[in-house]
Length: 93
Image (tube, rainbow, N blue to C red; front, side, top):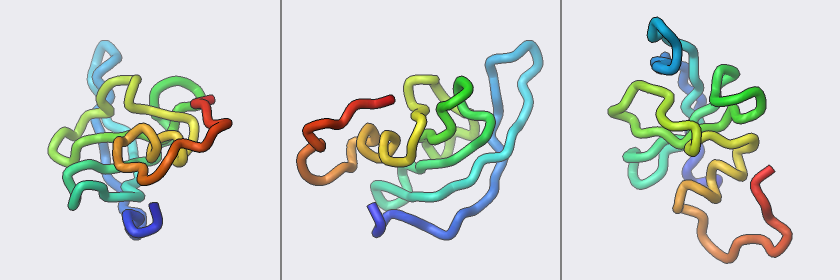
């Protein structure tokens, strides 16, 4: 995971699940697949606890709720770029 981390960069993403689409801040924290997949953090992620998202850099929306997780570890494991076995006691919280 460490090799994918970048200096956090603030940007805006569009929340499309309200009557009027609005933008909220997100922090880019990791670039995967040579920058074709991002892991971001946002206080405005899906749900009350899912603040870590897997998003496409060219899509400025928050994306689907199934791409948001409660921890950075959950987002990285579910990104498809986890190397090695899944820890035996692992479960998405």
